[in-house]
Image (tube, rainbow, N blue to C red):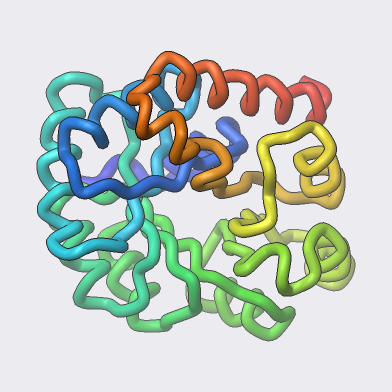
Length: 223
């Protein structure tokens, strides 16, 4: 069962960065996600990228329900309603997609699960609001205009909560540009959980990198 919708939204905003991750090995996923959680990133976006990915997600989610219930498992790369329903049935507490799909929004709303669709225009952002999306994903962040896109959206739509993925680096320079533009959170994948760290299974380094990134975001926010 998904966690409380409002609690999840608050956790995403407070955390500020969502690690985006997929691997077909359940044990490796568990270790990476625990490292992220230990570093302060309790909300994780598991991407629906591989064959039978939902089965890996199910096993990982069942593990954390017992081992560390504070972990909030979300799913990304969702483009259709049946897939969203499958992941929600297996414990997804938030759903993220590269595009905006009204049927996915309906499924998520029916289960009181936050949905963050990928949007790249004011019209898409506005439609996402009409569908009940509290946090809208900007995707691909670097291609639709970067931080300037955020500023331009927040001008006419100042109530918007934006979360870019793609084009956000875990560096002070990149994070400063995005958060000063007005985003509430960001999704970072391989630049946060790098191939090198995965290959070395250096979970301590992953924890450290996540913690440093969250600390940077707090510094930029003035907290």
